[in-house]
Length: 235
Image (cartoon, rainbow, N blue to C red; front, top):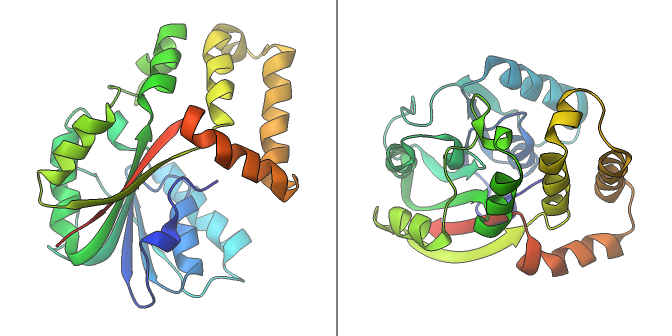
């Protein structure tokens, strides 16, 4: 499940950094696009899953082999202007000092390069916080809710220019509302049937559904998309 459309920020021969890569979904996509990709994450276990996932499911169809590096988004272990594209998807909402991370994303991005950022959209995220304190109080959880204008100004303050913005994952907003509503039961291993059924629907929609289902979700993204995605260019 890709939040950022990597094809919008990549070109052949580019170097791309996926900051907070998690289990590697965007890093894998970049490797399939014939670019030099690096996935960075602070969590060793998730990096291991990203490496294994590449070898098991992506390596046979990828054009390049990505690197995976352990590191912190607020102290990126790379020289200035190393990358032609930087992806940072669903990361900034976890960081107490997100402005320092933005400084770092800008620092390692080359002139003429592209930055793709995604965070939870304001109003679907607000519903989640209202339904469950534990949703955002778990260790490593979300520490803020972004308003689109505030995040845009923080990034444009680095001199980057907004190219486009969109929303993604409309089907996931109701899932997280249900998960928050029944958080205690789910955590206890007794999720209600409605939540389990919706999880099955999401799996079906992602892996087995006809194209029309994807088109329906795309149409709903503007109204109820859970993620805000913004694309920037560095002059």
